[in-house]
Each structure stands twice: as C-alpha cells, then as structure tokens.
Length: 630
Image (spheres, rainbow, N blue to C red):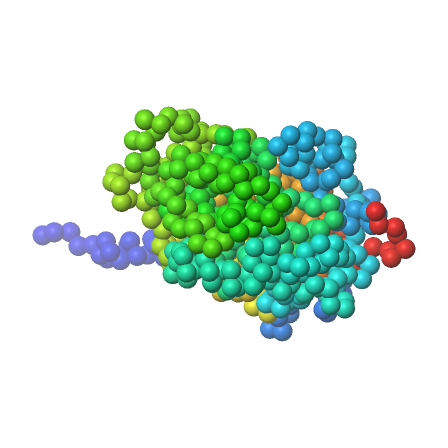
C-alpha cells in the first residue's frame, strides 16, 4: 500500500510562497520607513509659503508682468523644492552676478551684422554685409536696452498693419518710400498700408495677380522665400492664404526693414545674397520671390539663381517682378537704357534655361519660372551643353558658412520622368503631420516613421502642459523661436494658435533635421549658438530652449548665450528651458542677475523625471531717455 502524505505537494508550495511574500513585504516596508525618516531629517520645514520660494530661489512674478499662471494652478503646485529632492544648492557662493545695461547706442545692436565692423571687410560682392561676428574679446557683457518709451507691440492680426513709433523710431522709410506706400507715420504709430515698389495697389492685389498665374490657395504651395523683402508685406499678406514666407533683407544703416517686419509679427531674418549660401537646406521652399530686390541674378555665372535653385523644391516656382521685367514700359523710370535692360533679361532667361527651369508665363509686371520635378531630362541635356555642371561631391544641405557654387545641386534619383525627386509632399494642412519624405526614404539615419509619430505625441503632451501656465491662445505671443527644433514637433503642436515659429537646428547637430521641418510646411534656419542670431533686438515673444545648454555648455560661455537670448527677447517675453537639474541651476544663477524672474517646474510626466523645466520672464525695463543714442 502506498505511503500516505500528511498534505498535498500543492499545499506546501503555497505555504512557501506565502512565507517568501511576507519576507519581501517586510523588507520593503523597512526600506520605505528608512527613506521617509532620512528625507524628514534632511528637509528643513519652512514656516510659511514665502519661505519656500525664498529658499528655492523661485520668485513669483508680479501680476501682469510675470509668468502667467492659470487660475486652476496654484504656484505651489508648479514649484519644485530642489534642495530637499536633489540636494543641489542654488546660488551658494558670493551672490548673483549682475549684468549692467549697455549704452543706448546699442539699442538696435546686431552683433554679427554690425555696420561698423562690416566696413572693415571687402566690398566685392557685398562681402562686408555678410555675417562677421565679434571676437571673444569684443563680446558685450551687458544687456541691450529698449528705447525709453517702449510699448508692448500690437497683438496679431492688428500688428500686421500697425507698430508703435517709439519701438522703432525711424521715419526714413516713410519719407523715402512715401510714393510707394510702404509705411506711414500716424501720430504715435506706424501704419503699413501693404504697398510696395512693384505693387502700388497693395500686396493683397499683387498676390491675387500671382494667384491667377499659379495656384496659391490649393495647399500645394506652403513655404516661400522672399529675397530683399523690404518690410515683408508680401509675406504678411501671404499668411491669410496659409503660406509661410521666410523674408530676408540686409542689415540697414537706418531703415530697419527686417526690424519692422518682425515688429509686425511677420517672419523675417537679416540676410543677404553675397558669397555664402543662404542658411537653409536644399529643397526647402515651394516658391521664391524677388520684387525689385536689386540682386544681380545674371552676374557671377548665374551663381545667385543657382543658389535659389538649391533651396527650391522640385516643381517649385521663382517669381520675378521689377527690373528687367517689362522693361519696354518702365525703362525711363528705371533710368537705364533699353539695350541694357534687354541684355539683362536675356541673360536671366539664359541662366534659367541652363538650370532646366521652364518659363511658365510673363504677364504684365510678373515673370514666373518653374524648377523641374526631377533631373532625368536635365542630366541628358548636360551631356550636350556641359555648363553649369551638376555638383558631384557636395552635401546640398550644408549651408552654415558655406560658399555658394556655380554648379547645380543634384536632386535625388527618380525612376521616371513623372516622379518627384525626393518624394512628393502632401498638401497643406495634411503636410504638417504626414511622414516627411526625408524620413520615409530613410535619408536621415536613426530617425524612423515611428520616431516621428512618437515625437508628435510627445509635443502634444508638452504643449498641453505649457498651456496651463502660458496664454498661447490669447495673442500674448506671436513670434516664437525654438532654439533646438529637432523634427519641428513644437511648431506642429502650435499650429492651431495665432503664432509662427522660427525653427532653429544647431549647425553642429549630429542629425541635420531642418529639411524635415521644411517638408512639414514650417520654416527655420541653421545657427551656431556660440554666435549671435541674425535679427534685431526685441524681436521674439517666446523662446524655447530644450537641451540647448547641454549641447553648448562645454563649447562656449553660456552666459553669452543667455545674453543673446535677452537681446532678442522682447520686454516681458518668456523663455522655456528644458534640461537636467544641474544645467538649469547654472542657468538660473545667471538669469537671476539679468532682470529675469524664473520658476522651476516639474516635467510634464511628473517629479521623478530627471529633466526639469525652467520658465523665465524678462522684466520690463528701458534705457534712459537722457542717454544719447548714436
């Protein structure tokens, strides 16, 4: 007879499991109690709420001038006590370093396009008007002052038509361009009627004329570039047609055209076509425009049109109005001979033909060409005509301090004559969230379609988090800069708000993603943040700096990057920093001496994420009226 057991094997297994579970729970409980006791010993108890803020170093901004907090969010819920959680002391040594105001002669200082510095350089091909940044010993260690009577700019869309005179006290354009209706002075403000040299009936009517020749409202044209933009009225009036234009013009001695454009809430940069490539990737723009922009398109072996070809998308359009177009009517007013103007137009036609462009139409004051959708036929022609040749060993997106060339930028291979090189784009607005061709074709190593979708979801969460404290939908912000834009997810998440975003991809990034941003229908530029940005002071309302200082803290002095941010930020403008605790503590120690009020917040995923957020607001202050401005 078989031996009987006092219990089943199953019963013994359950009993053993219960003992192990009890042991684990007991040890865990002891660990938790030890952690709580240790944290209690290391956390000094503040006597009141204000003591908490003083200890952390996060002042609550005064109402109306600081970080706007929603009524549903109490300040204490947005403030993180880093001393108790991370044991990092803030400002633990000899006080906060103060940055004095610069003199009023620097009120409109543009470090890398300073006219005084530019005069030291060669005037050939306008080299002296390109970027020439100050050496380290020339960098200013002071804050750029606003004019004495500076006012908060008008909100969009009113800002398109009005700006305060005291913010940009320059009457020159209202006098010099009075007949052309660019700008008028009306009491304490400027008014922008939308006129231009070649559109006396206004920019709206001029754009309607273009729309009769090529489709501006179908969604197929989204990004544009305006060379020699004036006060950017063309770009301003394109916005109502869902077309986003990058407008640029040189740094003016007096007229401050780009400054006026940005004051209006219209995208613009200081820039010039001289010897270096424009700071944009290849195949970026759906449309390029020149309205009497005075660029010698036919000279230097057609180099400037070749550069336009580089940045123009396959199938993109180039629009030219002004000399030499319609020279038979205007030659007397242009004070040039008919022979000279005819020769110039013939030369431009020849360059365009050599680029394999097709002339779409010339009607009244407008001439329009179209770039081919691929280079299959063009390559066949080059075997016969030879010049200009197709570039052989060049990265077409390389554009930071890279000289222009007189060879044609090659397009990606196409298998048939009706295939769009590099991939066709969705129409706007679907284009903003469709997988960009540069990603779907695998041309950017390490970035997949899944990465792209995840990034979009990430930014939806982040912007929802920001909205709790920042009035994104109320018109408080118009000009926004993303200093480290990656795939443009921040701009995409803001697309429903009355804002535009300058997406910046650091020139020394491991992954060049600016082309992706343009394929999504947004605009941006390359930039090395150890140098100044190509804009005037006080031209951005909100700056986003995600991971920027982790990139640059070992490359240059971050105090100069913060001073540059202060230069381009409007009074009462906001900055959002995202970085590690250690980096944010360094940043806060500097911004505390820069008339900024700041507050450290938790990551949107909660307090246990090592990345934190620092929200800072630049205080309102101006220069002294008694200081003489040069």
